[in-house]
Amino acid sequence: MAQEMTETIAPKREAHETAKPAAASGRPASSYGAAAHDPSKPPVKRQIVAFSFYKVMPEWRRLPKEEKAKHKAEFAAVLSRWNKPGEFLSLTYSTVGTRGDVDMCVWSIGYAVDEMNQMRSELMGTALGGYLNSPHNFLAMTKRSQYQIDRADESEGESRGAIRPGGQKYIFIYPFWKTRPWYLLSMEERKRLMDEHIRIGLSYPRVKLNTTYSFGIDDQEFVVAFETNFPEDFVDLVQQLRETEISLYTLKDFPIFSCVRVPAEEMLNRLG
Image (cartoon, rainbow, N blue to C red):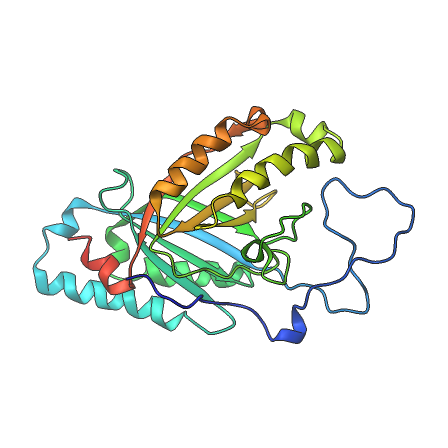
């Protein structure tokens, strides 16, 4: 059963309260940024997010059962050691049977690229790490949205400055690129197109969207992760979004990863 309580990773409250927009200055709104920051409030502390997918080599499955058990325990211990409340969080998923090129996913949320680097280095330094390939890895950051979402789980008080994973059983993850003509549209036109996109998303309340931004730090522009207990809702949502006008400005939105959330030990047991 999926966890009932939402997991959080955020600094102390006073360090990430939502900043109210500053008074209008007559200057045109940026096409890229969010509402202006109120200098009287602390800035939102943005997070680093990584989705790492791993494929175990066939040779590992042929090892003695006792040896594999030791490998799993060592790998799980690294994940456990790096789960630091308010600082660093990792969620684990099995992709066995949902994709042929990956077997598991580790979704980590922290506050520094160096931490991601150290943690992944420790994972790959384990005995099991010697039998793993990583065909896909997506790095991104949180960022305050420039559009009005009007949905609690889209902002969580920090306007996407902090990710708060839910307890849903499934997550659907994919990198995303928009076409260059999209960025040449006026902010008013983009908002018009986004309004329809958001309206459709709001009609599926059992699907929680996490959007993160990769401009300049990875190949993709965005990484989107949809959490839900109802895969059928996600299928219907994506099909309906294909029929929107804004879909004309999608350059690429694959590969798509369908993942089952399980504790680290179970994720590793499902490797075989």
